[in-house]
Structure formats: structure tokens, C-alpha cells
Length: 279
Image (cartoon, rainbow, N blue to C red; front, side, top):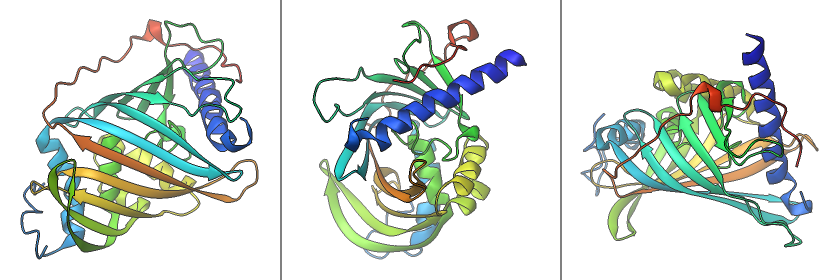
């Protein structure tokens, strides 16, 4: 039990370090056919609440992520790319932190493994051996890891839509050569947590309590099978330094459905339980 608590404590430190990098970057620091009636969607809210089920029916995909925030007058962007298995709710992303404003330091890519209730990070934190992973219990994070890891878990991004309270059909457009339907609306994180799958429920509950507001404006683009091709959420969290709300825009792009996904979670002996030094 002591070792488990130590692992959680070290996870808190490394996550705090990642958020500090983001926040201080400017200062140097299942109706899968629900979208078929594109001209006149009967119930946009229900269509979006079913989007996560459509992804699970699809099985897997490749994903690109982008997280943007403005701090100190500078816009900071963190990008990620990888694959995701929606049936097992597991994914693998390579996350690129922004270069320091002075351009003197280039951060190594962080490898992230996403799993129900857990985030595993490699190449994160000074003093962590190169062959070790840091594990974080996402239910202990105030944002449920919707923001902290620098990339929103693709399935969690879809599960947020289970909390859709209002939505409107904007029209037809195209993303990467695919015809899609564009919707705009607002989701409630507490409602999303109530309707979420077991793997996402606790993390979304934490986010509903930890964000500056549980309301999340979104824009989402669904293909004719009801699958998310692109979703943008606008989260609001409290900056620990100034206690003022900070807006974060998280965009997830999904493509190449059915792509092979191989995510193997590291065994216990490969998990680093020591103290993470501040960078």
C-alpha cells in the first residue's frame, strides 16, 4: 500500500510539472447510422450522445490531437499523434511539447499510453530512468486528464458528448475528403459522467468538480456512420498561479478507422515509483 501511495504522489508531481510547462509556456516555463439523415437530423442531442457508441462499433482508428491555450500573451500548442482501440479503451500517443520561447531547449516527445482510469507517460520528468514509465490515476486529477496530459483521450472526448444538453445542426462540410455533418452545442460534464461507460465515469466525475465550469462548448463533425471525424472542446480550468480561469481548446481528429492498434501496458516492474524532479 505504501508503494502504491508513493506512486500516486510521484504521479501528482509529474502531472503538476506538465501543467506548469503548459501554463508557464508563455513566460518561459449506439445508433451508428444516426447521422445518415444529414439534411434534417431529427434529434441532434441524441445523435451526439450516441457518437461514442459509433466509435466503439468502428473498433479503432488513428488520431491526431491538438491542445491550445493562451498564457502571458503567447499561444501555446501541444500536438499528439497515434492510434486508439475503442473496444478496449486503450490508445498510444506521441505528444510533442512546444519549444521554449527562447528557442534554446527542445523537449523530447512524450509517449503516452491511455487506459481506463490510468495515464502512463515515458520521457516525462527529470530523474526518471529512460526505461521506466510514470503512471497516474486519472480519477485523482482535478480535470480527469481531459487537459493534464496535453492530449484529450479520444474516447473520453466522445464520452463528453454523452452530456450534451443543447446542440444544433450547422450543415454539411468536408474533412480530409470525407463528407461530414457539423454540429455545435454545449455539454455538461456531470451529466456526461452519469451516462459514461465504466472506464470513463470516475475521470469525468473528477473533471465535473475540478474545472472552473462543468459546461463545455463544442463543435463536432460526424460522418454518415455517426463516427466522430473531428471534435473541438473548449474547457475552462483554474490557473493555480493566479486562480483565474484559463481557456483551453482541445481538438481531436480521427481517421483511418479499423487501423491496427497494439497497446501493451507496462508491467509493475517498469513503473517508476520514485520522486519526479521539477524541470
